[in-house]
Image 1: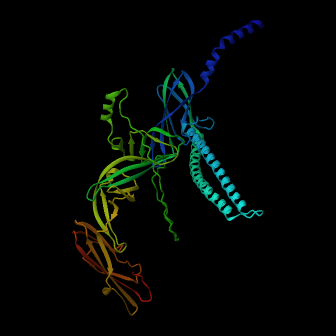
Image 2: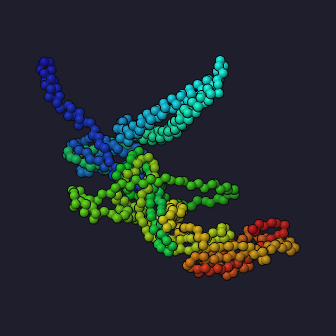
Length: 552
């Protein structure tokens, strides 16, 4: 009986041996690499979408999806599987173990480091030889001219000096040249080593992994889509305002600075730039008690950030798949977009506006800003000249942009280009209902002069009161060959004490606008070619004679 049982066990083992590897393979999880296809980038953060394909077998199984960002909000993770497959669970983790294959860029940087190290070693060797030769020559001449056993004749001394003079300059020049080359090679080597260190650090970092538990009704191919939110990406709106000439509409170029440190290089990814804030807590505010306390404030200095821009636009190919030769060239010429306006669509709803870009982009994961052109708008512009001679003796060309609200612009920095020349930067404050006004340039041909009218200015004391009178004459002249619109501003003081009284006694001709809160008078008028006009302002200030008031 025992012999029969042993025989049966052996037969069963022999039967199972071919099946065991298959069963073992079926229990092993499949590993697939997901490709990043879409990135919806917000002012802070981004939603990334990956896709992958896997050949499922019948029944329950585990699929490991790699190639995700390690910097994700796990609560935002969403996974979908095509077909009638059932997704039981999805678990996110970071892979710290798997070695990444060294990229060709890293290999090139390593080769560059070795090349410059060899070049530097050769220069160091030449420098060492030249220094030794120069020292040997110097020591030999010195020993020859300072011998105690034998007194050298003037001719022998001259011969030694001539030897040094003929050999030393060439050696010294070689030393100087090698030192200069040494410094240059050291600088190049240091830059490459820093880049290599940065890229190696990026390639050594962890990667995101999602482990899926699936149940498939039948063996079939399935598509997996994974989306999640990461805080390690952002975009900043910026602009270029192109003013071709006075009197013409202004071209407003809308641009975006995109950056990301998600641990992935975004290669050929479709971008969607949104002004939404998907990760912030949304809750309507409620009032609480408002308690007043007295305190003193100090103003903190205002700081600005500077950004470096680098453009990494990729090429756009529009010829349909399968077309070759002249047919493909003709189709490409028919479908090729003329500008970025043809590739960027502004989509809006009740809560957000998004720039959807048809052109795929490469955004490296090094955090450097990538500049992307979005839209180009022609904006109605009104031009005028502006002068405030109390502040500065210059006249400025100004432009006011109208009807810009329709473009749903966000606040941002703008480069101003006038007649093809970059003239500076300005901030586009789009959180206002007022027209946008920009300073374009100074205009020396519109002369504005402000001078004190001494005959009408005085300071007198009567009893306990001092009365100060100040009067100024402003002269403007248009030396241009055509009429201009000019806005002239002047200021008078505002009293901050009940014992001090300020009166505006004269403004001639009368200003069109008097902002009494600021004490600012404004004249808007046309100034003909060669025309000269004058404006006067006079005010008095009464205050206790024991006090002092600075009026100049």
